[in-house]
Amino acid sequence: MKTPRLIQLTPDADPRAVKGALTGLGLWPTALQDERGEVSAYTLDASSVPVTEERLKRIDGVATVLSSPSPHPLIDEQAKRPLMVAGHLFNQAGSAPLLISGPCSIETEPLAFEVASHVASAGGQWLRGGAYKPRTSPYAFQGRGEEGLKWLRAAADEHGLKVVTEALSEQSAQQVATWSDVLQIGTRNMQNFSLLKAVGATGRPVLLKRGLCATVEEWLLAGEYLLAHGAEAVVFCERGLRSFDSQTRNLLDLGAVALLKHSYGQPVIVDPSHAAGRRDLIAPLAKAALAVGADGVMIEAHPNAAEAMSDGPQALNRAELSALGVTLRQLSPQLTQDTTEGGAQELEAEGSEDLNITLSEAGIRPLSAR
Ligand code: PEP
Ligand code: MN
Image (cartoon, rainbow, N blue to C red; front, side, top):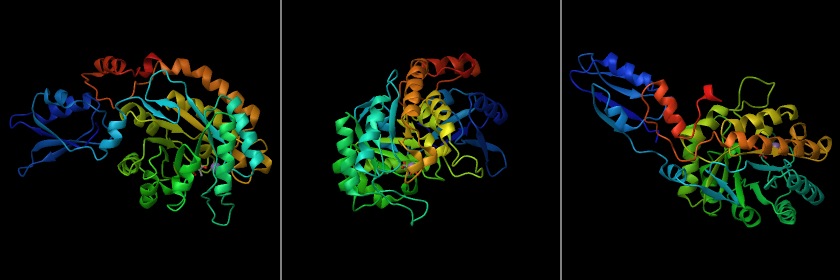
């Protein structure tokens, strides 16, 4: 696992040679000096690739390698084997991409049934939709509550879909669990630890959206907290970070998706709807998401965007959703050959050539070979 590491040098080590060897392995070392001002150790920065302890010990001049235990052992554990969540097998090479779709908000009963039929015919497996809506303004529409949950459940059941929907408060967590298969934690609540505790206690799987400004480590820790409080599984959902550019609603961090998938072996979904905030970018971003290793995408859909009560500009209509479903299915056979088999990968790497060999053993093909 990727944990903080301290590499102590032997008294006769050549620090520059050790630094060169570390850098050659794709590691970012920071020197630590002893009381005489000489380099006696290196720490490895977070942007380093994972390399085994045994490999580090073989470097000339390395005396000891100290690693602190992972702060998210339960999350590390879920990476070790295929993970079945609401009928979808994550962490399994060759698994078809998961398409989650539905309206931003479950506005009416007929809408729930109409969109569920669109999602099912587009090849979707999970129906999404907010009955409890977090909004940018507290004065905006906040959802239909339990009535909306019931519509969502009935519509999903009619079309053989699973339900994922957001739990917004500790008081309603159990109610949301009653009507859904997967509970969503929204971006504004990723670090609302009392809510995470209540949602974890339902024992259900959780779709954990990344906080607007959260680091990957904070996101992993929130996932750990959910598992520690009883969640069956945690699926991470990247939905874009707050950024300086206003031409997209948020900044989709596909680097973090690749990291979570290829380095941490986690189940990951990408939500291009909230990331881009614009319909025209959803298909290209969804394809990019699968290309970097996402297990699936979550897409907002509405039959009549002009009348949507929330997020209309980013909603796909029936034809657009069907077309996207076809595109993703066509793309997936090529991509699944390239994805990892799941499980955090620590690479036993020598130089860049050997690194490529090891990457391919790990199921990751170097970019140059694609
Ligand atoms: C949503 O998925 O409906 C939603 C509100 O998303 P986010 O929490 O990412 O803003
Ligand atoms: Mn929305």
